[in-house]
Length: 417
Ligand code: GLU
Image 1 (spheres, helix red, strand yellow):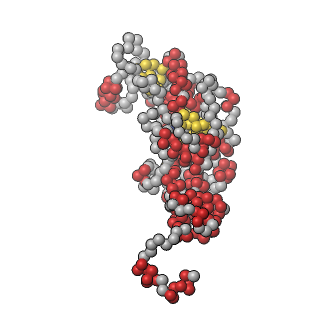
Image 2 (image 1 turned 90 degrees about the vertical axis):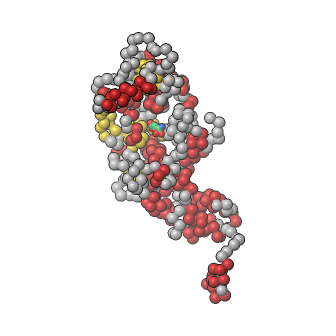
């Protein structure tokens, strides 16, 4: 992809897995986690929390934190979204140790895995058309059965119909169950009879999410998959795919979702959800991280955590099972705590950024540390601090004549001075 490297990308290494065998035993000893966003917009707070937990878990265990960009869905991914994710990670200083890897560059690995599955009889071509599938689903619904692929092409012996590009389906085991000990949710068991033969390659041969993610996690020797619980339904299918590819599944931990204050899943509807919009709104990265770490995890009743404390204390066992509620007020409170207590120089750097954003040259006014000292008690965000500081940098280009006449009387001169 032809674009400029951002800070987080610079900081990471890209190892080539192209020639690596499916399991790299060298990696098995150390903890390896990954954050695997699909670049379909920006880095939102839920994604940032997932990234943070993966980062903390890896750091806590002296492991490796990997960033993987899941950009196989070409229509929905774009370079601006990739850049927004990298910039969001860089602003939060969630440096990865490896990556970013791009799924769009790993097509050979996916084709290879699909070919292996076909050759081993663990996958098959399915020629059922969309209309046929829809008609059968409607019949199943009418009969009160949960709609699912009926396995028609699973053991097809007759020659395939001409002129149809098949999809490739995984031959999911028909009996037995898949069980795992989820790092957050505890023991989960799903009957294979509940699982469809999922499509692993589309009619144009492109691989689907469940296949790419398994191939990547095997190749990258991921030991712990920590992700949102919107993926919990994919996990049993993925575990079956691992086994079919002769690989040991990693450990899984599914994080409860984040709700807005109205109890609905946090979304754009609730206002700002992108990490960089919080930067723009005057939040410190330290405050947002501290807020995110507490959003679904706790350590006693401690509210403020330095990064070193987060790393030292974070444990999956303390991640809550119940959904977390996003509170803008609490985030603002935390931000104010950080503005009041961080070293002036650190806050001054951020204030500098916000002043420039308002078109102010921070060199043409008082020293920024002095401004921080003056305003930190009453400005809960950097945007407010910059707004309150603005008059210190600007000539009075215009003013309200009437108020001036009313208030700027000789008697006011003394107190004003
Ligand atoms: N790319 C997926 C997403 O953004 C995450 C995949 C995973 O963590 O397994 O939701």
